[in-house]
Structure formats: C-alpha cells, structure tokens
Amino acid sequence: MASAGKTQSPRTMSEELAYPPKTTNPPTSVSFQKPSLLLTFSYNESHELEFTNSSLRYYVQPPKNADLNYGYDRWKQRADDKGRIDSLLRAISKNRSNLDASGKDGRSWLQNIDIVSWRGVITKILTSPYEKWNSFELNVMFHDGTMYFEEFISNQRQLEYINMPPRQRRPMYYGFAFESYCTSTSPKPSHAKGGWGGDVDNHIQWCNVVETKLGDTKILIGGEVDCVRGKYTGTTDNFVELKTSLTIHGPWDESRFEKKLLKFYFQSFLLGVPEIVVGFRTRKGRLSTLQTFKTADLPGLVRDKPGGWNPLICLHWGTCFIDFLKSIVTSHSPSATNDIPVWRVSFTPQKGVSISLLSQEGVEEVVNGEDRVGFLPKWYFDEITT
Ligand code: A3P
Ligand code: MG
Ligand code: MG
Image 1: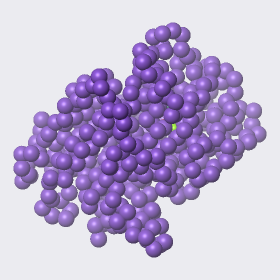
Image 2: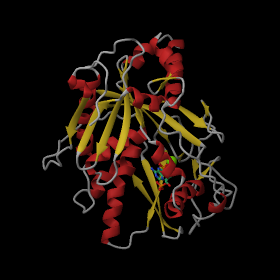
Image 3: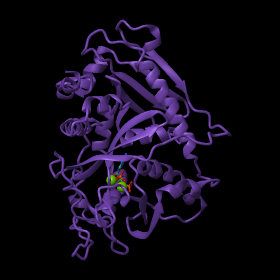
Image 4: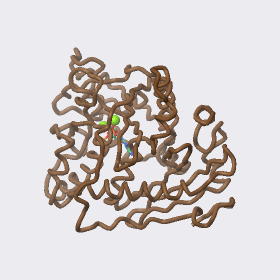
C-alpha cells in the first residue's frame, strides 16, 4: 500500500482492519440513538441549496400498472457532485449560528460531534459485512474533535456514471420515475397521473440533517428524504422512503430481495424514516404491486431467511470501523494549523479496510484546484478555525 512522504511515525502511515468475522455469536445489543432532526434544506431545480422546504414532496398513490418508462426519452440525467459534503457544512454553519443566536454555544456543539457524513456513506460502512462485490473509498479528515467523511469518487468512476450503458440507465430511471409517480407538491394532487407531468429532475431534493449516536460516537448525518405521508409535522414520524424492485417470482428472487432489504433498512433507519414503500415492477418497467414495510420490522422479516441479515452485526462492525479510524487519525498531530492530513480509507469486500495518509499528489487531486483545505472548503475551515 502507498504511504505518504511527510514526517509521521510508521504507525500513522497505513493500517489495516481485518474484515469482521461473521460471528456465530453476534452481539446481543449495540446502542443506537433515535435520530433527532436538526434542520432541513432543499435543492432547487438548479441544484442550489435553500434553507426552505420548497422541495418537500407528499406521498400520493401511484396509478395502477404505471409505466415507469414514461418520460425516459426526454430525461436529462444529472451528475452528482462527487460526494462533496459542502452542503452539509453549510447546514452545520447554519445550525451553529442558530445556536449562537439563541444564547447557546455553537462551537462546543460542533466539537461534540464525532463524525460528519452523508447518509449514503454511513450506509455503505454499516452494510459492508454483507457486501460481496462493491468496494468503496473515503477521504477522511479530523479537525477540532470531528472526523469528516467524504466518498472518494475517482474521475474514472464519475465517467462510468455519466456514460452508463442503457441497460443500467433505464432501470435507474425506473427508480426515479416511481418516485415521481408517488410524490406531489401538494398532499392532494388534482392531476390524473398522480401529479407527475413526466419530467424527472433528480436535481430537486429535500434533505434532512439529523444527529444520532452509535455507541459513544455522535454522528451528524445528512440525506435525502423522498416524501412525507399526510402533513409535514417537523418530525421524522411520517417520512416515507420509496424504492423499486423486480417482481418476485420464486425463491431465488425472494432471497435476492431479502438481501436488498439490508440497504433499504439502513438507508431509512439512519435518518429515522419509519416507512418504506416498495414498487415491484416488471423487467420492462411496468409497476405491478406496491408493498409498504415498516423499517423497524425488516430485521424480523428476514431473520433466518436465505437472504437474511442481522443489523447488530452491521452496527457492531460500524463501531469497530469508527474506533479503528479514530485511533489512527487522533494519533497524528499536524505540524501547522492548516496542515490537516487527508486520509484515504478503502473498503475491499470480503477482506477489510485499510487507511493511509494521502501523499501531496493525492491531496491535490482531492482539492481539485478549488479553494479548499484538504476537502473542506476554505470558508468552512476558516469559520471553524478562527
Ligand atoms: P431505486 O432505489 O428504487 O432503484 P433513493 O431510493 O436512494 O432515493 O434513490 C432514488 C433512485 O436513484 C433509485 O431508485 C435509483 O434508481 C437511483 N439511484 C440511487 N442510488 C444509486 C446508485 N448508487 N446507483 C444507481 N442508481 C442509483
Ligand atoms: Mg430518494
Ligand atoms: Mg428512494
């Protein structure tokens, strides 16, 4: 493994954590605090962040046998912003000033947060004990008591996403089309098509930022919430996650679906989303049936099934993973205030995790010519450092 050319002791250069044993005696409990909602924000059509609920959507019943191909030919696929956590940092900044304005101490609030991350990254970490194929990489920085996680998406992976072949692109569209059929800007849509005119815009997103605790680790997590059922009450109690999956025809399909439920589970669990509506579809993109799941019921539903999983194994692995990272990043003392190292964490399925200090070249790739300290935008770094 590559190691960096700075002045650190060998211990901080590169370390490995072996893959978690799929223990026959999983832990009987791992504490996870119910996520509490800090604030919400919206991305508008131009994918600009606003601290409003303008992109909040309401759940509506999709039409029977809806055609998920509808609008495909005019879909403008938009690339993601490479895993950057800038919007989450803006939310942190906003929460800090809200706290300061109400006489509380925004700075110590942030210092007590151990990890800042998008929900997708934490989902990948927690579900990795069951991951057979997909690897992932993270950039990690530790500053003023807080670890910041950002997914590292190489230019090659970004290109693969942009140039995705139609056999992958179309099923991906089905997921977006289902979300569009099932959501409306008003709780009672007046349109026959469930409020959807056929234009999928994955730039419009409603995001929630929550605070939670895994074991002793306080985590601030941000993620998209698909919609709410009924009125928006300012709590997560009636949030709904929408998902599509192929119709189940036999035991093989069933176990495949059970395996998929692991991702559905953690994706929703981490933001406190209590309900998942799954739209089962044909290969050609016709909606066949709808099934509603309570997030909390999923572990019980898959227990002892061929595609089953145990969330305690995942949460336990999460605590090992975090402790491992913490022990390494906290043992490094930067030589100057703005010399905050960037660590590269790589997960390899069936093997484990390795962490190494990025070389100067690696950091340059992360900064990417932008005004950043490591991957943190300069404005944020200055705000929390001064
Ligand atoms: P499905 O999950 O129904 O396939 P989300 O469910 O997380 O809100 O995402 C909405 C849709 O975005 C997904 O619908 C899928 O079509 C697409 N999507 C999300 N993450 C993806 C990924 N990592 N790769 C490909 N498509 C993805
Ligand atoms: Mg979504
Ligand atoms: Mg969804």
